[in-house]
Image (tube, rainbow, N blue to C red):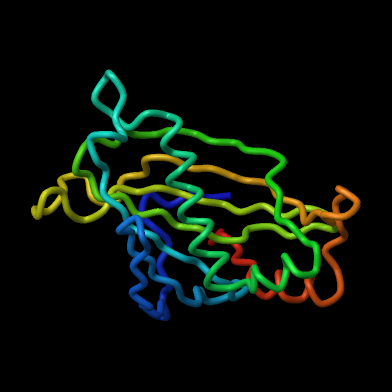
Length: 188
């Protein structure tokens, strides 16, 4: 598996900018990601700016804040591609069961961060969302000297839980087909 130091981009420019702004002032661009020879899937990009309250005593983003940043990216991905209200009515909850997170470069105040989110793997009972945070193009209105640098990478493992039984559900049938269409394999 090869990791690129820049946010994933479609070779043919097929990202569709939906320009969503959330209550947190983040920006989300969601589109279909296709590369020649690879399975088409979905990659979302959410952009946010580091604020002073995100920092720890060392002047860089506190490790716990990355979980919030990643969660913002996952919510934007899910809101764009899943009918969360219908899942709730059906008694289905998406529950995190594992997290692996690596840090590569410290983010600091005023850094623009780009969070990429994709459904990387779909198994019989679990799925893995792969996310990365890269430095954006700008810092305080100027071009960032380390634009595109990988800040952090995380894999979140989820199951769909039946809220009546509290048990993981198989990812098959209609829900399996829906999720399968969202899987975006990494470029080899």
